[in-house]
Length: 311
Image 1 (tube, rainbow, N blue to C red):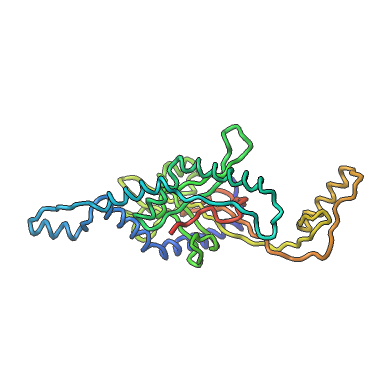
Image 2 (image 1 turned 45 degrees about the horizontal axis):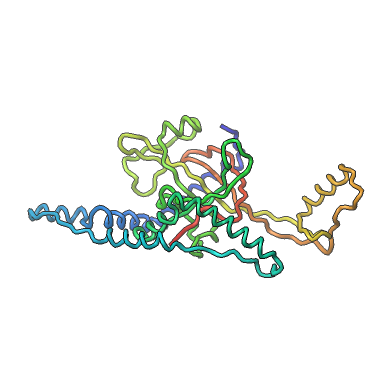
């Protein structure tokens, strides 16, 4: 396992606390999600209802009409899936219309690949039955021998194992400071992949009541691994060059040095006007168990949080 700097490991308790608080804040919605799915697909009777019927010696008779109605809505949706339109940003009216058409076709192709795996259908089902869903947008290599990447979108394994900053106000939760996704794994698998330190000090509760980083289910020890995406900020000075590009002063100094080392005759682009200070936003991924960080924090190339909330 890679050596992780102390400045990162000291953040672990704070990150764990934010995950636990966000999970507790949204927990009523998680519980309703599972209750609604049970109501639609399994039974409308609660445990108390079943006990009362057994005491009165009455049969447990149910007629499930809700599932058939939802199946009809899903069938109609499969023939009328919503689309999208790509347009030029305000102030860029001179963009070639052919370029816009190519970009729109490109993004449609990306979503078509996801829809072939049932993305829209599964998300719509979650919305009808559970009330919300979560989609993960990420990049991946085209194949195991490729250096080129593609954009992927898929429904997460379990929307109730995802969480968002309680201070987020927009419907997609992308304006929050963080988001996370939890992955249940067997303790043996965690130890095999990340070493015994990933399990150090963990206690396995008998049930997943409240919030536990580890618990016991069906005689197996389960550990929750977490991918935590956090917005981090840094101050930088930027300047506009004579060729129209805007770069940071630090990058411009590197560019000028490379230009001179290459022995180019042309004069490099020069800064025009005054420089100004700006705030650069970067999304960093932390991967950890309830015991420790198992990987170094990874700066991503995401411009927004990769988990999208659908209400």
